[in-house]
Length: 113
Length: 111
Image (tube, rainbow over all chains, first blue to last red; front, top):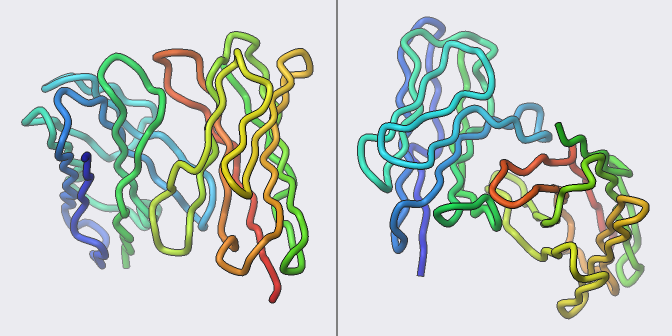
């Protein structure tokens, strides 16, 4: 069966510090991968998605970036965090070739102080 | 692009009552409509979905209905239980395109 992992589960970082969040998927090959941000406990904002290694599409201009160094690994990064980057970050995957049936990870709670 | 509206934003019911959450979409090409349940501090979990060639789908106490003509779909939960308390999201997508999510409904089931 497929499993999606995210870490860390929680993170408190000062403004201006770097960020690296990791997501890995097990039990499937060449999945579509997604990063979402959820602020104020509601609303899923799509940040990035990837259909393959090294292929990243950005949905929202921001100081965040994403990379996919391996087939089942998706990383969300920032060089300098802003207060507005606080939120709940969710990674999701879907089968190759389609966005049907997205499956979400457990999320990372990021607080920028 | 697609636009999904979800109502109500908050729904409070007594245990044992039914709950209905409604969503409308704008793109007539959308053909896949999932519903997610998100418990506090966790990621959303897919609980039921429906495709445009079906008008209704049931899974135990939950059901989803789809009206393609009116472009709306609904989640129905019968015999609600306190563990049904969560935020529910609807979404709409067309094939391989990225789904568009509603803004969520906070369901509170009072024991």
